[in-house]
Length: 242
Image 1 (tube, rainbow, N blue to C red):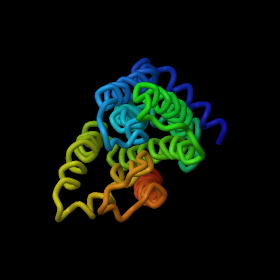
Image 2 (tube, rainbow, N blue to C red):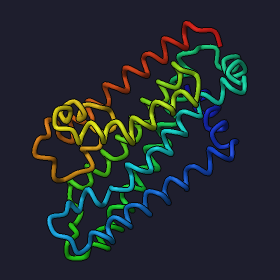
Image 3 (cartoon, rainbow, N blue to C red):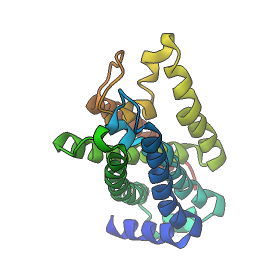
Image 4 (cartoon, rainbow, N blue to C red):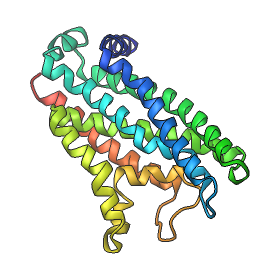
């Protein structure tokens, strides 16, 4: 397993587009959070916790793209064959790829969530809140939320083996479908169980009045989605030729 993870780390850091996406993710998250905090600093009735993490939901698409490309690039370039020669056990290869990307995501998103929160609270001034055990838990939850979305996306990419098709499904789902369904009263409850919407509840202090999930159960729903796609990816990888 460690051999597989080292190989995946080398692959990740050897591609310039992959390695540059990491600092870009941090910049986008902090820029959007800062903008939201600055424009909301004089408003009343705000959720300072949600504002503190507001950039993470936009920035996470970069980590999703990174996870998808880490899978599909091997198929488009043909390196999947040499990867499986180096790690013949497909389950170990698959677990190593998932573990490496999720570990990178957890570390980076946890640090970004902490910086983003304190940055925005400073901008909010008296409207900001101090960090307590609940806030620290949400920082950790933000890291888990992003990592589970990456795992969900990588599982789907393993099934589809195409970055175009996979991102063609995920980007509209995360940025259009979820928002549209959440704004329609008849479909609002259903929308809360979509992977991105369910997991994002951990980033809020004040939940919507009609919420049927909370931060913990929302992460559990997202984890269930991730288990389904990761499991489907494993079955596909095990049974289909490279």
